[in-house]
Length: 351
Ligand code: FES
Image 1: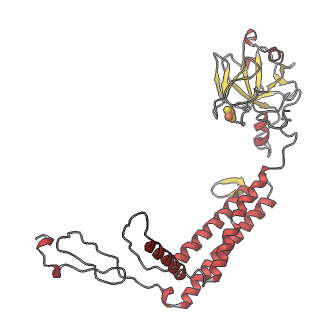
Image 2 (image 1 turned 120 degrees about the vertical axis):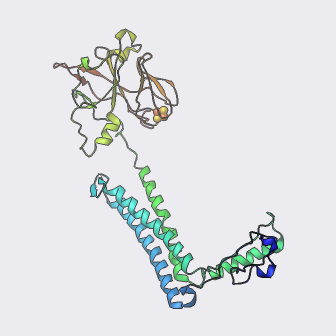
Image 3 (image 1 turned 135 degrees about the vertical axis):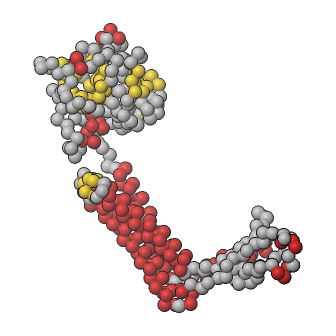
């Protein structure tokens, strides 16, 4: 038997959000079941429970404020190079850990406070609204405003001043975390970018094998990465120094070297250039052995290592700095000084 055959008075009844019966018709096989009856929460009937919830929400917002203060204190007081052991990750930067944890707590507490507030204290009466035309009539707009005011009234935003004030406090403080990070824009590096770890007599160390390089280790067509002798990965400033001193080494036939200074600064056709792109500082790693071009993977700047590291394509504004090298008495490649110009983008000190 289909629902059309059932007398309307025999159809099962349901209730809407306020406990009212939902209208059914015999021709509608999928009648809207309506919303379950509204159950008041403990906070709706017990003012002491409502006050307890209010205190929990305020506590979460206060915790957010404390975490933001902790973020700022960590940022100002923790040294950049201090590391701590965190199980199960291992050794990590204490500063990064503190900044991440405090910011996470600050944001989480704001979210948790808002959710707890909405779940326990704001009105939880279910409301169903029909779709309507996009352009609202004046009387609809008036109703929306009235509903908005009623919602504000029911959320007790004006009445529960403790929640309102702590929430404003947490929301006002949390952007300070971002403002503090602006401090990283300074101070200017001065001449720090001009100096690298290279100096006269420092041997070129293969970055993969960690062995000093001899000319015979460099084959035509290969690209070798090197760093100055004396640098160790466990040194606290290793990353900072290698970011400036990293070197690319290739071997060319001397007659293929077009730039006279490049030829003078080479050793047995071996040339050494900074690995740091002069656009915005990405490490260069793609070598095309037929053309002697190297390509930066970030924005495709291309440099000609047989012509003084000249830019032949892309947004980089300067040639790659070359390191002057020679073969020492023991047969190893060594630097004859630091780079003659700043490595990387080197914005302001180039002039
Ligand atoms: S960083 Fe190399 S092209 Fe942009």
